[in-house]
Length: 407
Image (cartoon, rainbow, N blue to C red; front, side, top):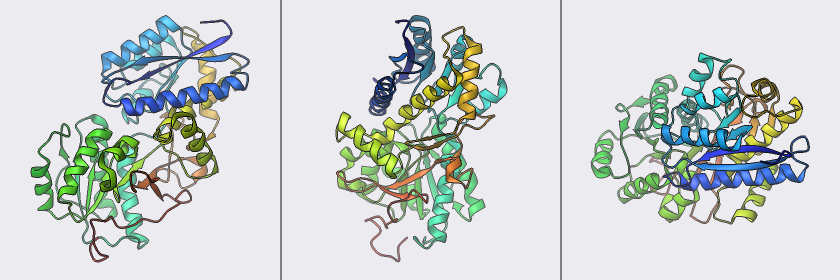
């Protein structure tokens, strides 16, 4: 490391089941670093990037990556996309070093860890809302479709299929717990599956017997979701279909083709279609190709820019062992609300994760938008249907719902 650079690390699953997203995370970091360095860096020092592969995202892999970045590269901060599976084990290494850590793990467990010892975990931030908000926000979204007359459900029944990762289970349980509050009926407890190799015919036949108006699945790997969706489309249920985050990725559409049209997918951190979001998407795809996914790359892109601003306000960055310097950077992250390409980044003072809109606040200038898309053809942009004021399209009944009387 040269004295005139600021080393920034990243732990991303380049060789695991989330490799498609990991490439987007790497792209976003590269793009942000280039922009920062073209503007004289942070306080006159260039950003220098280091990447560590976390493979299957297990706790040992993520902890090893954190140790290597801190011990070998003396990074001042670690800024990631997500690692689902480490369950915050890497926080201990980072807290011992006293550096800044911004990730997008989307885990409610982050709140618990930070609030258990705020002094120790002062530098740990989650650059998006927790996965809990996916569940509650989805039920609110369904209710909004119903109440605005965009969709007339045949009944009030909802079925849920959950992946077996804690991330998926928390989302499924949050959906289930919110159903009654908004006038929906859960047909049975969420069905937990291990992978896309499950006996989907048997599972879907069981769900079909309950005749739900909505089927939601909280699996999140794009390949698993694509294989599930193809099985669903062999004999589609007459219901709305929600697919968790991974269906946003280009690889999902490449696998399912035209059969994906009509499915709904949501993300608590994505890319609005306003002027800022469109400009970023254009620059991102020009650099990384038409098949890249700016909705994924924008995550670490946003967090690296926010870190650079906070460090500049603090007047200095600190490496391992310089916790007092990094406490000032952390305080600036908390105090400085940042209007990013993804929307408003405002950290909750206790959780140190981003506050979501409209799930937790009604003012879009105070929260990151929980975006809902409806998938179009494989070569078409997904329709952004909620929330206002970000929506640019209207909800349409999926093709497998043949007429307006079927909802």
